[in-house]
Length: 289
Image (cartoon, rainbow, N blue to C red):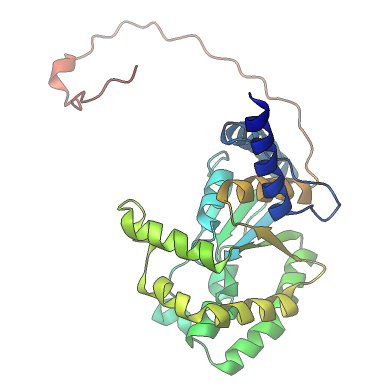
């Protein structure tokens, strides 16, 4: 690498570090390549598997809440966590619009029904905090219902923690400019257009309203038993690594002894199979080399 190119790369890396800033303990973030990102993600996912095994073995119950503006990267972060884990013991919950019946229930009821049993990890892709965000801003709840939520929510979370459920809450933070860029990318990507809804697009017109609602939410619900952790989500890959790394640090899991697996011998009993030509085979349109 020439001296000029090396200097240019160093300046680019320095600018990126300056933008990200040192973390809360004074360490400067490590700038890595996209190839290194995949390796770091794999390493973190291995640790997630160890964490899940410990949660199962000890009967822990863990709730992780993901909140943030539309396009903040909640779903992508959740996928990188869940794809490495046993889905029988790690559930992703993304509740839709409440039914007519659910609207008549206690607000928290449909969320409480989802809480984990012993050995389970629950990932909420949006949660009861809808009331402090979209419902407040878009007028889907009354002011009295909103005030009741801010009063009741901390008490409920304290009760969950007292009964042995660990509650970890993340707010994924992005800028106005980055949200607009991601919205426009979705508009032109057929694979991602399903993510867009009229409500999402309307939210852009209420940017400041949502900012105020978020700040009010943090003010009332950032409690010692279940604090909020804000993730710089301006870059999706950076956010995923930082979030997963932090999540692992919040649960005092131990590396349990590895399981021993013994593969049984193949059965050798004689059996005359029917002709494979009689089966409906999927056409081979592709062969990957």
